[in-house]
Length: 135
Image (cartoon, rainbow, N blue to C red):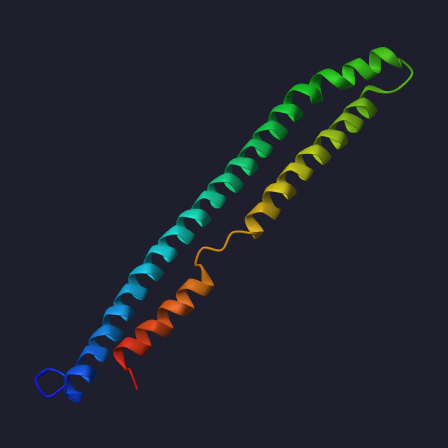
C-alpha cells in the first residue's frame, strides 16, 4: 500500500534476518539445555555404576573373609575324610566367582556411560558454526 512507509524490501529482509538470528539464539539455548540434561543423565548413570561396583567389591571381600573361614570348617565337619585345605579351596573358588560376576556386572554398566553426549555436541558445533558464519 502506498501509505505504508515500512513495507519496503529492506525492512522485510531486516525482519527476516532478525527472526532467523532470534531463532538461532533460541535453538542454541534449547541445545544447551539438552546438553545439560544429557550430562546430568550420564553422571547419574556413572554414579549408579560406581555404586554397583563398590557394593560388588565390598560384598565380595566381606564374603571371602567370613565364609572363607567358616565354610571350609563346615565342609571338614561334614566330610572328615576331606582335607581341610580342599575345603578352603572349594569355598574360595565359589566366592571368587561370585565376586567376579558382580564386578563384571558393574563393568558392563560402565560401558553404557558416555561422558560427552555426542549428538548434542555435534549439533551444538554445527549451530555455532552456522551462526558465526551464516553463508
